[in-house]
Image (cartoon, rainbow, N blue to C red; front, side):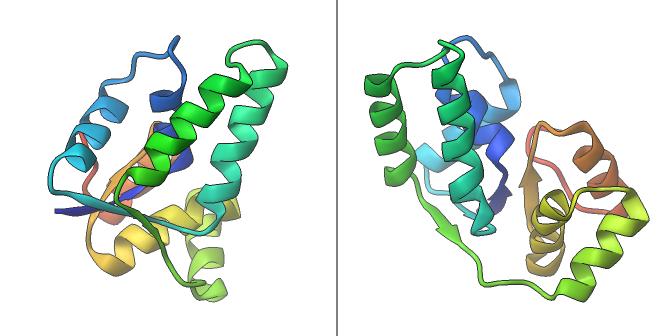
Length: 135
């Protein structure tokens, strides 16, 4: 089974002080036979989140290396650039950031589930008929 993963789910998986059932479910799938896909911005978002976490003392450089190694070994691929028109439409219709609309558009286009912890993205996915991991 293939699904879209967003950076909020991957970040929750990376930090020891977070307990998120959706992140656990997504990574349990990835440790099984599932694969995930994400917009290219996922790569930057996750690393920026880890950088900010490091600056705030939530994670150290050795932990970052370990979690990125685990993330890099997970079956996550990156999608091509989407249609800007489709993203603007979704972002406007659901008052999402352009970034969040990229995750929703990918799940919608590929007709696959979305793994997210973002409340606005959950609402938009539900409104668009996109299934959610852990829902």
